[in-house]
Length: 180
Ligand code: PRP
Image (cartoon, rainbow, N blue to C red):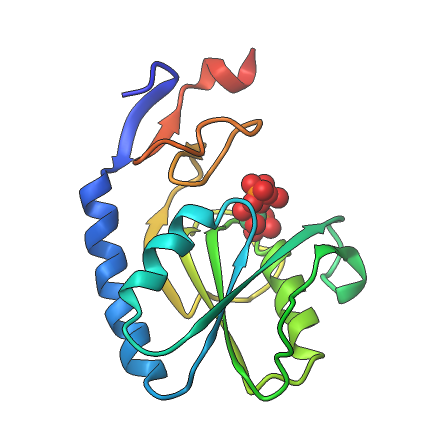
């Protein structure tokens, strides 16, 4: 275990099992629909690589980078798209792949932005849902692997100051690391 990690929350094996189950659900729901999986960089990169291989129906992938600002009600005006999709999503079934749903600010804005492009559907698949966080939107994940409390989680794509993304498990960061 990394010296900055207090406790392992989900092991590599638990993550693998959860992704397998969610992948099977997505496979069944999207059979024959050729969905576009949209990873929101950078946090989703490890999850994306794993979940796409558990989706056993035809699909394609794309990525976005989005930064959102402000505490006010979310509108497409307060998300800045730093990298937009390369794919035309008109009439497509889009499935957003995200590492964590925290306040929901990012995803609410991204979903709203994507809906303006007239896709057939936009749904959300998140690895973690911080259920106790103050949500700025009533947006819910359509698929998720785990609920987490208000803890500082890192690993498996999730960072603190760009570190720890390469840990193969999800851990709780020691308080002294982010409070020093
Ligand atoms: C993190 C995470 C989500 C977002 C969740 O991204 O990957 O995109 O925050 O928080 P929210 O629900 O409160 O909006 P971050 O902006 O840290 O970028 P990263 O993906 O590059 O780590």
